[in-house]
Amino acid sequence: MTRNATLNDIDRLSILFDSYRVFYGKLSDINAAKQFLSERLTKNESIIFVSETPEGHLTGFVQLYPLFSSTRLKRLWLLNDLFVHPDFRSQGYSIALIDKAKELAISSKSAGLILETDKTNMIGNNLYPKTGFIVDDDHNYYSWSE
Image (cartoon, rainbow, N blue to C red; front, side):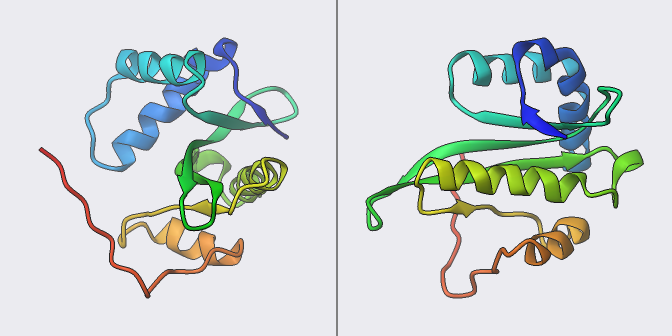
């Protein structure tokens, strides 16, 4: 089952979010994860969906940020974070979360979803094409940071 995350989920969601960050080489910091997620939800800056077992155990999450496409004159959603706890992988939770993100894109009449992942993320790089995402070889991706 997938549903919108609420502030009541923050403690359990923060543990998953922290594991996600550690997966990407960041240091564990549960308190910072709680604060970050709480701010995103209370400020309506992102939409987070969670997946859970029938018993209510959180298995994963997807976090989406709203963007806009000037050329398409529509909203666009950045699928920024997707994580399923290793104990629950290969059970359909990732696909269910992606489907929930697609439902959001359709219901908000957006231009679609975009995402990026590390080239070394073999799990994601195998999953995304299976769910209809297409690798964009036509555009260059640039970043800047201070």
